[in-house]
Length: 256
Ligand code: URA
Image (cartoon, rainbow, N blue to C red; front, side, top):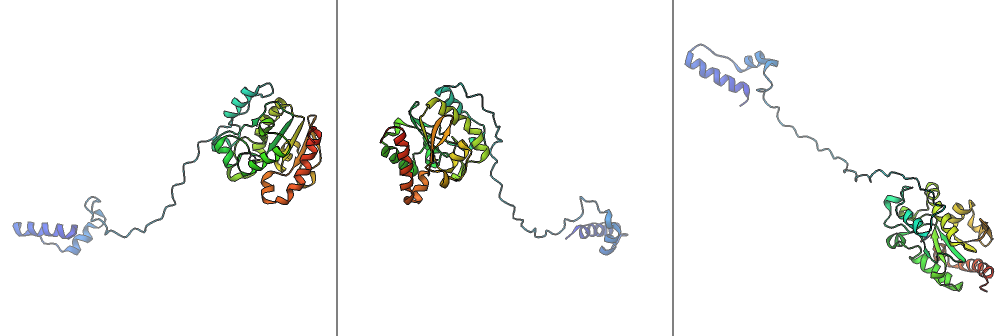
């Protein structure tokens, strides 16, 4: 029964009691037309509402990163520099890191190694070159007649680039002041650059295949570019080239 039937029923009741009113349903409907107040208008028959598949709620965006310019690092000692790196928010890698991978080894020594940036193992432990490539680097250092603790190891960037991609130009530029101050503090006689990334960002040069094995110079320090140990894991045949490069470094440092 809808509203019209209800009204007619009421009027019929009224008519039967007063004896003078009779109305047909159709007439009443025409009469009331638009004027049936919304409150008493019959609710439209429910219709099947097509189910709209809404896209899943996107994951909450990481908090907006406030890029914080680095202070002047040029007079910092090891402790101040390390502390500053731990608090660094100078590039978009900062909020994604587990640990800052500052560097490790002897704070003043004749030989330094520079890689690209931390991978997953390094990010988890906060120490450079501790994964598979790191194991190979440790063997390379031993073959050069050094212990890992006798050399200094650092990277172009101190925070892990997601999915082990290369650091971007921006990330490298934001981070390189740390490495430059590390080199000043270590005062190495020779630096071994591991792969194309440190050659690009420390020396401003590209073409590791062409450049490897040839001495370069950075601020009066001899620099030897060679292949990255991760490359050697994929291309073991290139170990012979790397060994030649390292032997040049050994000869320069009086280790042969
Ligand atoms: N590769 C790098 O270049 N650096 C590390 O610390 C580890 C892997």
